[in-house]
Image (tube, rainbow, N blue to C red; front, side, top):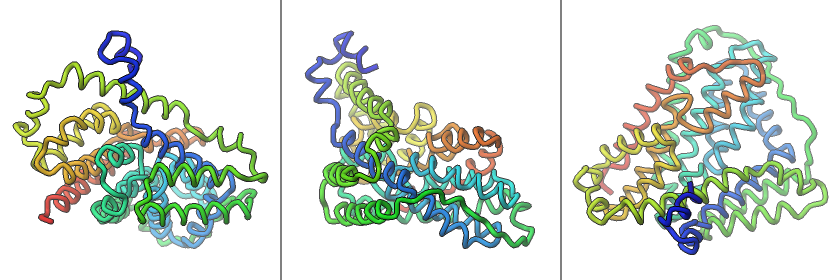
Length: 371
């Protein structure tokens, strides 16, 4: 798509280079390295084991899976967390002979809800953080309460929809396969993550902090860098670069000043209307393209800062609407399929529909509240 924009003359090569937001690309790359190191070192397996092995009833297992996935997704990229958590959930439910579907749905939906909380939670938030100039602490202060409400909603709705799974008062003894752990590298990764969190909230540019944190983790002889490089999603980085060029080309050729100004006539200054519009657009064209498509219109609204937060909240929570709504959902479904379990569209939709409506309404109400 980006190449086509250049080929038809919608944008020059020089302007195409300038259109790519390298802060977003760098932040995504740095976080991929951090997450890859946590995965390869065995940190995720160890944390999952500690949390889940303390779940001695089905409902407590649901709570542990939801909170652990949501918390990790709040600071690390949610898609990567699903790659780690889904196999753990499948292994545990197989060992204790429970229906894996409610717990898999909790993994996918909690990753989306938890990732709302921060700029580093998901790719669309990274784009918004770079384009909006909203600081990491301000972003989190505005949207962390929405994320917390979403995690509670995940637990309540799955408990109601799959009540038969949780009504039997069964005592569980879940065991998680921990595998080999590089203890020294786990400690190093945890220290770097704590340092990153401090840097983010202290106002250090997030792309700079993530890249330096990733570079520090690569300085080791215990884990070959090639193992980390294999975990980096190169096609995703190229897709982001291409999307930036596509949107810049479209903005130059299709978006006249009158069309950009028409955002107000559509009522997008209204939090509720902007939230609904973003959610629908995200389900039509996926959340990252939807955010980039809305980017030219947001600065012209009366309160661009609030509008960016609404777009971040709605584009992420809209991913819970259907199984196809976000990459995180598809990752969980694919992990389940590989393990011989089918996570069907309707099984997910029974939770996704009410969860999306409730969380979007709560998020819009929170952001619409004065001050």
